[in-house]
Each structure stands twice: as C-alpha cells, then as structure tokens.
Amino acid sequence: MKKKLTDNISLKIMSVVAAVLVWLIVVNVDNPTRTTSYVISNVELTNQAYIENQVCLPDKDQETIRVYITGDRKTLSRISASNIRAYADMQQAVDLERTPVMVPITVVCDGISPNNIEVVPKNYAVHLEDKKTQEFVIGVSSGDSRPGKGYEIGTLTCNPEKIKITGPESLINKIDNVTATISNIEGKTENVSQETSLVIYDKNGEVLTDAEMSYLNVPRVIVTARLWKVRSNIQIDAEEYTGEPAEGYQVESVVTVPDVISVAGSDEALQNLADTELNRISIPAEFVDITGADSDYETKVNIAELLPDGLKLPSGASEDVWIRVKILPLGSHAYEYQTQDIEVENLEEGLQVVFGTDRIELRIKETEEAEEILAEPWIRVSVNLEGKEEGSYELPVDVELPEGYELVEPVTAEVQISVISSVAENSEE
Image (cartoon, rainbow, N blue to C red; front, side):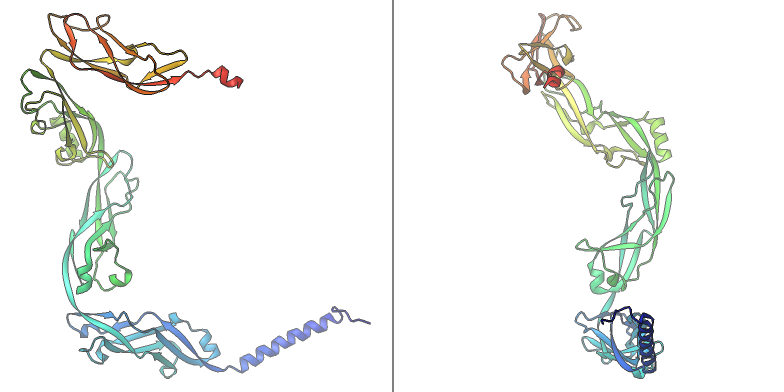
C-alpha cells in the first residue's frame, strides 16, 4: 500500500523546523574567521599644506586600491566599502623629488583592529603641480527661466563681478569662462536675487567635472535680475536722410518695416521716452544716404543699437528695421490701388481667382496739365487671365490712365487661380 505525502504531515513539518534550528545554532556557535576584500575609490590627502605652493593630483595610472579585512563572519557582514576610510599623509611621503610621489596609505574601519587590515598597494601615487591664481570675470545667465507676462529681464548682475581662482596650473589654464545662472525668475514681476554656484567651462566648452572642481577654491555668488516693463506701439521715425536724389528725381516717401516696435525699459527710461520723444525712436539721418539715387533706396538698420540707455528689445524680437525711401521722377506720385477693384478678364468658367496682396502700387507721372486727384472712373486697372489654368502666377497689370498721365514703371500682381468647389457635388459623391 502506497504512503501518501500528507501522511504524518505535522511530524514532517516539525522535522524541517528542527533541522533549520539546528543549522542556525551550528552557524551561530561556529562563527568562522575569514578575510574579505573591498575596493576603495577615494583616498583623502592630509597635511597638503606641508607642500608649499604646490597641489597634489592623483596619478592617472594609480592601481586599484583594495583593502583586505580579516574578522569573524558576524563582524564582516556589517562592513561595506562606505565604512572604510583611507588616508594618505603628505608628511609621510617617500620622496618629494620623485615622479609620481608615493604616499603611504593608512586605512581605518570602525570596530576593526589595524592589525586585521591590509591595503594593496601600500602607497598612493600623486603628482605635485605648481599652484596658479587667475582672475575671471563672471558671466551671468537666466537659463530658460523667464519673467511674467509684460516683463523682460532688464539687467543681470553678479556680486562679486569677478573672482580669483586658485588651483593646479594645468587646470587653471584649461578654464575658458565662468558662469552664474539665476533660475528662480520664472513668472516673476519684481526684481529677484539668488545665491548660486558657479559653473566653469573649459576651452572645449565642456563643464569641469566634480573631481576637477574639488581642486579649485570657487565661492558662491549672488545674482540679481532687474525686471523691466514692456511697452508696445513705439513709433519708428525715419523721416530724416542725407543727400539728394539724382537730378530729375524726388523723394516721394520714407517708410519703415516694421513701423512700430515694443521695448522693455526701466520705469525712468520709459517715462523719459514718453516725455521727451513722445514714444518715438528716431533713426539718425546719417543712416539713410540717398545721394544720387534714381530708384528706390533700401537699407537695414540695427534698431537695438539706437535705443536710449535703459531700454532694450524684448527677447526674441528682431533687431532689424528696414528703411525704404521711394524715389520717383519729378512730377510723379505713388498711389495704392485695392486689388479687389481690379477687373479680371478672360477667366475660364469653373475657375476663381484670389490676389496675393490686398493692394498694388501705381506710380503715375503727370505729363500735361492734369487733375489733382486720380480716382475712379479716371483709372481703369485690369488683369488678363486668358489661357491661365489652376495655379499661381505673377501677371502684368493693365492700367488705363486719362490724358495727361503716364505710368512710370510696369506693375505686376500675384494671383492664385483655383477650381470652384461645389459642396453639393462633393456631398453627392
């Protein structure tokens, strides 16, 4: 008769429990001594002041430092590499004239006798390098942090503005620039100050590592962001220019693109702009020289360079302002004509046309005694779409003028021709 696994189950469970208890008793009574190894990554150099005007740098070929601790199982089970501290006393250096200098390593671990600790290798290899002190101007940044709506960062200042950094000569020579970043201005509408750490970049544009920074005496600094209000609809005034156009020509008008801008400024600067300049930024005449011009003159000006002290352009705004001086023959004038009034001729059935702009410019010259104002029905403007299919075109514009007037230069218009879409037909499909 077969025995079932569940026969005498209570007796079997008691047997397993008893076996475990016996094993625990044996293990705890028999607490063997053994040796465990640990890898140490940091060695603290002590008494570095013993070496005047020099700095100790770890040798890049330093062997991996292993610590061997002998003890019973219970003791060793409570020890990890973080419990072990390694020191290298520069006063115990073997030979300071040797390269690298070998410094004896001392290892301590709470609860472990020095006689039960062994370190391999027994010496820490270091290089001695001359100290160097150099002064750096601190660059200031706001990173990706932005103030609240209607405000811009007016000025960023750092206290102190420059610092002296002392460290190993090779490391000091690697430094390209020092930067402090203020990060707590997001959404703010009042001035902000923040104490922050410095970030140091090498000549490759890379940030110094924590290990490299540990050899430098770099203080913390205070960065202050002064926030300025933004004012819009500031007029651009470019009415002044130098020189005269070619003989037989005249200046019709001067326009700028854009014609208004926004600026950010301190309260004092914005008030002064309103009081003395009537919210206008004037472009000096010397920036627009039309001497001898017989056609339109266009130039680009960096408006940021012309703003009064205490004003700046909002972030992301273009610094460029284009100035266009319209120069026409004497007796000519420029007229703007609405494209919606242009007559469309010979448009094929089933097609529709849209003009690319809302107006075109007609430059017209008086040849004889003429009316002072040109208007409907004296001017007829049309565009011929004969043979034109769906697509985009730049086509000549026909302009019929009354007697005594002539067109100074040809006119074109951009048109987009498309098929008329029937909603009813589409729905049936």
